[in-house]
Amino acid sequence: QVQLVESGGGSVKAGGSLTLSCVASAYSYNSNAMGWFRQVPGKEREGVAAIYTGGGGTYYADSVKGRFTIAHDNAKNTVYLQMNSLKPEDTGMYYCAAGVIDYGLLDYSKYNYWGQGTQVTVSS
Image (cartoon, rainbow, N blue to C red):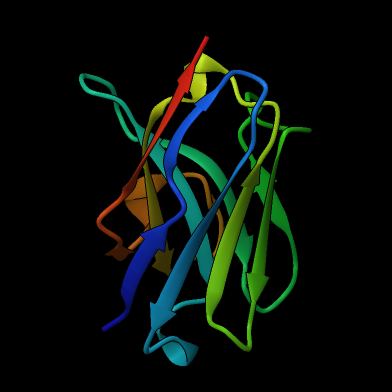
C-alpha cells in the first residue's frame, strides 16, 4: 500500500508561483509513475503532469506546458510540482497519485493510490 501526503497549496494572485510536494510511503515496488491531477466541482479530474519515477519521461497537459514542472526525488520519495505564471483557471483541488502504469500517465483511471488533495486558488 502506498500512502501519499500532499502539501504546498494556497492562495496566490495570477502570475504567482506555488510548489506542491507529495511524499510517498512504501514506494519502491508499488509504483513506477506519479502524477498530479486537479479537480474543480462539477468537472472530471484532469491530468496536469506526470512522471516515470525511474526515469524515462515527463508528461504535461497542454494547458500547463511551459508553466509547470514535475520532478521526482528518489531519495526522499517525493514528487514536486512547480507551478509558475499561475492563472485563475489553474484553481482547483490538486491530487497526487501513484501507480504501476505502462502508458497514459495523464489518465486518472490508471492510478491506484491517491492523496487527500491540496487546494490551489488563483485570484485575478
